[in-house]
Length: 582
Image (cartoon, rainbow, N blue to C red):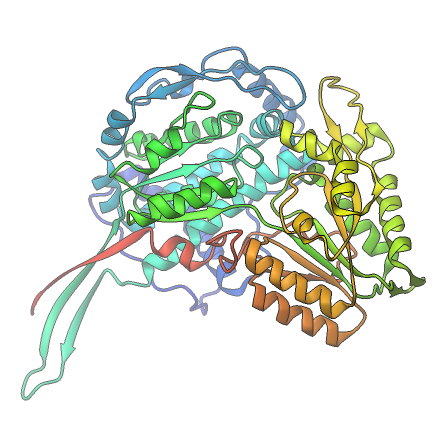
């Protein structure tokens, strides 16, 4: 960061009372934090953590050591968290989507005693100030990063992601999102100076007051993890809350505990080594079906909640916890949309869309589902294609990408639950319900290493725009609906109406017309969803880059917040003023 940069407000002073180990981290990580602040300001490419798992990047023994560390957790208790407070038993029943049972057990907590214990160290953490908290949080992310291969295997075998994707998305990409949240938290806290002398002109000497401002946390923060992206969706809220002074309870999905257990263990170790209570961050594991999230969400000391998951429980949190005055951040279901008007690069567009449909078997909150195409067809650089011809070309592109089972599994991963599997297997019934046709049926793929894995290729179903009841709901997993419309104008109108009512995390448009692109931008702004235009290369609609792309907007029903803008962090703390005459 250059000496002339003025984007970020001035740092707060580091309190003399802060632990010496924490003060040292402020100096260690000062340059990295300032660079992250600058990236937040100019939205430039910025990554602290390399995304390639290559031994040229991480060293020859890193991958093997990470796998050994993962395997060392299996069939035993997760003793690294045995020192958590209020433990009253052990739980755990994770089964890998690839087949094997993990048989890892985690400490189970008594809720009342846990929430009492986590607040014990909060005053020292609050009084350490924003600079110390940011430095300690970054140190924690660095220690998590050192365990990226271990976490990758744990995500692969709880979420079902293919290994390289698990390494990137659950490791470096999630870690960059964590750093982004820390940077935003630091910026928002720095916006209020620690101390000022206030002067008001008056006859004679001006009125002068000394005003001191203290950032204080909202209370205890609760992070409710999801099955499919346990780290990527949890780190932003976790570190935004921790960096703003809140103690954090992490409640993982019961089928994806291990990735967050490893993460929490690394954070607790960092807090302890930095002179703070490790109980500022705890893992609250539960038995499947226990309903612990509701109990924690309604506890009086919990003031901030982050949730990723289905719309039913997300709406309950917004209504019941939000109605009780808690700050609730949700990411729920949505109907992601592609509008095809005309195609400037057919080969590139087909490959891009096929990969977007196939990545992790469509089990991403950003995977496109509805593809609107005029029933009269579209113009392309390879000539005019009818609706059916374009549909068939899309199906062929998916087949080319997923035709070799051994290669396909490295893109598809494994299906995460029975609901996804039933949806992929039921395309014929879906087509009958909609009065449409199956363009490409979802195929079950044989995994060469894990014979018990249920792996499915994307299926494509063509429907008419009148079949709104089918395409206006999320079909989570490898299901793509090709919707025949009367015109591009109707496509854009249906896109806007559907997203306004049902939500979306992503949208895309293909057109050779600048007017249509402009109209699509207006439609996306009206719908409140981010738009990708004419993607034909190595960037896909279901990917977002930390420090540049905002994940979600908070402007449609799919999510009420975004990773990670100022609004995502600013309401996690309050400012208390002390003033006196000078």
